[in-house]
Length: 300
Image (cartoon, rainbow, N blue to C red; front, side, top):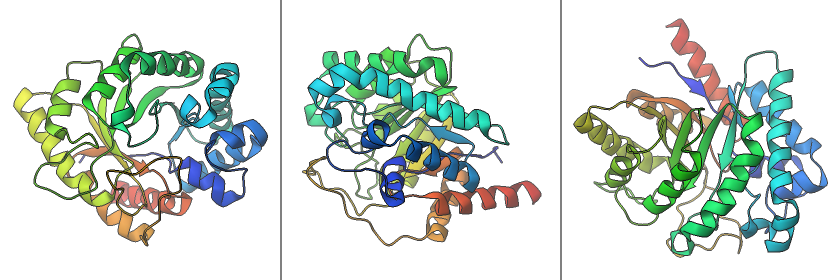
């Protein structure tokens, strides 16, 4: 079987759980601005739980969360700060830890209808340049459409570091997995394989829909005789509706246990996923269960 690497969990909700400053619309950026020691502690908590990759806390360093004025004044500096904090935590860890730079949705999660390619490129290129010196790899996160994937790929085209692209899925189990845009995962994968892609992930979706997404992805890879790294980091939310408006409230959590999440992870691993972690609501206790499972795999 493939080698398994443990990714960290959801940073924003973990900061909130820890008691860090956390309000809408600033989201996880508020801790960077007001109390960055919480960001350090959150990274350390995930590493102690067994994460081997931590992601810079730059997800909310966009105008959608900061507002246009604060983004123009501090957006790049905050993204750089997020990457520096993650790198310092990684360097101080007892084991080898990789830092992932984050390219987030430029216009809010799950909102493909708001996407503007030209403006998105400018925002994401700013975040790329701010973080690149301090990260080991890249994750384009919560990609809702093929157009958004193309823009992220154009930002990362010059990178010599592994570039992973994580799609967010329609939270409805169906015979063909779909992005939030309604486009087929199979079409999105085929389009992305033309770019500088080291891996294809699925994130910030309910875990139930990821199995079909991997099935569709593997079919495209087999047809094109190509191989990429596969990964997953689902959320702990109830299904997100098509008309969900990010920043207008917090999505409800579902009652999912770390062991239930592990069952999904085992299925993804059997489908070829080699990087597995969690997104919103998936805290260190989930990552610890994944890490313990990895140790069992190694000793089996």
